Amino acid sequence: MDTQPPGSSGRADDGPEADLYSVLGVPAEADLQQIRRAYRRRVRDSHPDRGGSAAQFQRVRHAFEVLGDDESRSAYDRSLRRRSAGGGGDDDEDDRTGWGGYGRGTFTAGTRGSSAGAERTGGHRPSGAAHLPPVYVPDLSEPEPLSLTLTSQRVHGDLSPAGLGGLFSGGPSRRAQRSVEMVDRLVLSELPAARLFHDVSLAAPEVDRRGRPRVSRSAPRAELVLVCGDAIVVAAVVEVPAATASWDGRTLRAAGRAMTVPDVVDQARTLRATLTRRLAEAGREVALSIHGQVFLVSPDGSPMSPVVETLGSGTATPQATARAAKSVVAALAASERANHIDRHLLAALRDQLVRPDDA
Image (cartoon, rainbow, N blue to C red):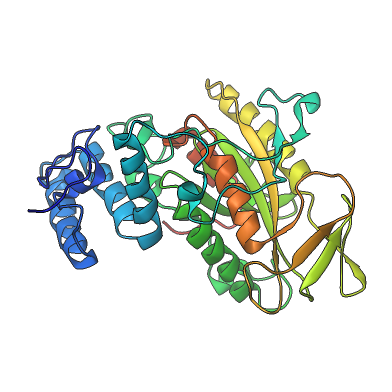
């Protein structure tokens, strides 16, 4: 007899409290082929055009996003075991990310917009909400403000060579795609409700004569923006020509020279102000937590390289890929609404894409 995770019967159950195995109607020991077959069957049967509902359809999509990926499935299984054991404590941080705990040095700003609220934190405590069933705001039965397809889309922004022309020097398309793939693999796979936006204007879009939002190509922008619940991380990827570097709180030095590092903290502040104002104009009051993180990539390709020597205090310490990813996951998972997908917020960020995708 198959051993089921807590609450799993192996029968299809698409209720909002059902565990993800039950949503697909598979046992906990199902292999990837079984999960794929069950997903194809369930996603077809739950589609609104075949008598299902948008909420059922999205629950099936979400279940496959988690269970169809080895890393996110392992994290989900651990969350089920903790829940079965009574919730577990906060000391077992290794189980929450698969990277051995949460990173240090992520910048956090107070959610009310006060500059006095900005601080360096020693780490973030997970809220426990990240792997709960997704909650959509507004419910998926509402067609606005974002379609079901775009609500489900994890990565937003045009990554085609034509769309990326001129954004970076030296192989812009390859570099941008590598950056997005890296964040997708290390961050989005850990947080089913997280979404990634590439090349986001920090200024509100203008409205053209046809009433459509248009973003100025000359507006200041952020390379990467991640959102999960009410938490936002502005990130950037910097290539470092050495296996070691130093950071004095303002300047990054590697291979004997100073390197330009985007001020992701300032970008995060600006983006929060813009989004808060735009959503308020639409009648929605939000309290967004913001964070900034710089990912460093070295020539050897190791996720633990370069090793950064910190020489002074500062915010948003640039870190090697693995450490930076831990910090970002921790910042996003700390939100009490880490399983919420705010469709108004996603729609606002899509309006600010410098290069929208065609979806």
